[in-house]
Amino acid sequence: MFLLLPFDSLIVNLLGISLTVLFTLLLVFIIVPAIFGVSFGIRKLYMKTLLKIFAWATLRMERGAKEKNHQLYKPYTNGIIAKDPTSLEEEIKEIRRSGSSKALDNTPEFELSDIFYFCRKGMETIMDDEVTKRFSAEELESWNLLSRTNYNFQYISLRLTVLWGLGVLIRYCFLLPLRIALAFTGISLLVVGTTVVGYLPNGRFKEFLSKHVHLMCYRICVRALTAIITYHDRENRPRNGGICVANHTSPIDVIILASDGYYAMVGQVHGGLMGVIQRAMVKACPHVWFERSEVKDRHLVFLLLISEVKDQKKSHFTLFCVLGTCINNTSVMMFKKGSFEIGATVYPVAIKYDPQFGDAFWNSSKYGMVTYLLRMMTSWAIVCSVWYLPPMTRETDEDAVQFANRVKSAIARQGGLVDLLWDGGLKREKVKDTFKEEQQKLYSKMIVGNHEDRSRS
Amino acid sequence: LGSRASLLRLYHRFRALDRNKKGYLSRVDLQQIGALAVNPLGERIIDSFFPDGNLRVDFPGFVRVLAHFRPVDDDDSGMRDPKQPEPLNSRMNKLRFVFQLYDLDRDGKISRHEMLQVLRLMVGVQVTEEQLESITDRTVQEADEDGDGAVSFLEFTKSLEKMDIEQKMSIRILK
Image (cartoon, rainbow over all chains, first blue to last red; front, side, top):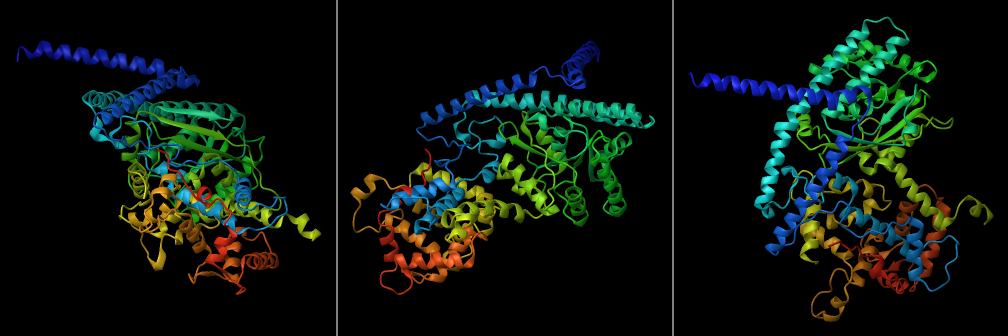
């Protein structure tokens, strides 16, 4: 007993000191910049270092494989087949040219060989397509030191195992507690901040404070996930008024977008921690959280909000529909349709994740929310790109559904066809048809020409 | 059927497409491929994996269809033993594969009706029925030699004899 006492206090002291140091570091390097929206560039440096380590790890594995005279299985992120990026017209012309000796003029006609183009393109997608590649997180060119993503276990030398072990240690014992602490800080600040702001009388000052409280807390959460975000085309960022539409709306996406803009959100009421956060947020900013049962009244509130948003001079926020992809019922459809019907400006946003650092895709049938968050927090980082697409408005001869599809196509074009899997509300079929139609239009031009030619003959 | 590395790649691809880990692929698995679904001939291409009313395709079957698209190597044609069955990626077999995309009822002939159907798939609603019919009639006329109003496999190959099929219908798998 006697011997334990001095050790005890020593350990306690050490613990105390390290905790203080940790918290000071946290404060200075993470939270303060988050408050002011400034970045030290630490995360980018971190990312570069990690990339170098990954490349080194892959080299070691290759060496290990060579020693055993085996071929290392290296998944290619750029595709496993040789593709030439040419357009439909060029390819079909090429095919026709190689088939006939007669001079090829531009008269529209059909050849039996045209079918080769579609056949080959189809086979190419069966061998290799963006979407399936994206979802099999194992398809990484260099191993990212996460055991979740390794195919070549037998080639790992001792050094690599040590490195991997170190990685595990760092991720679980250093990064994870840090991130949880940050997340905790961020969320509690959000709850407390918005509740306090809620007591103020309505007016410009309240809005100003609310905006900054929201932004600050989301920025802290972004750092809690070590999300390294690259923004493109920031000049198209949703301004006051208008509705923001994104291709993913999981909680992580909400955090990523909301850290760069002030949004009022529409979504379903959740229980537990999420519910507490939602209730607090609503005091400072007019978010709309609806319960499945009270959809009708909420719908009215929603319409009011939308009409406010239409009047660009009045509102200082943009509406953002956080409806979630796990829900798929008529009330959700109503809100979604409403957003497109109303005639406000729509700001499409495309989000794309880089799977090399951590797979942000939430397969809600496989993992629950907590498992998902834990997976996120024990990966190296979340690297993503956000594209702000130019705003779109509904044209006079379009109905809501056509407009919605136009927006979706624009987003899918930027984010890749991956996002055809987006959302269960508006029918997925329609977006596919739009793309298919484009190809059919291009091809028809080749065999019958366009309207002017037709009327002449 | 291909080098070991390419087979391995195709095997991983097969596994990635087989989402529920059943060990075989069904039509739905192929229909999930977004880029295939927007191909005007997507359904027909999927059909080629499920001949004779099959509902499943296993890995050997998968490879057998894709083997049609293996690039033709020069040494293949030189050293081939004439008693061995023709390799799947020969010119004849590639042509046969495409022919079957047209010839739905597998009667060995592309009737006017079948030609119309394929054309309709490729142009969607962009072309009127009359225009499509006139195109079909002209095409069948040009290719039809024995005057039976349909294009047989021989007539098909004849009209495409100058085409560099080997190159146009090959997909090279990266090493």
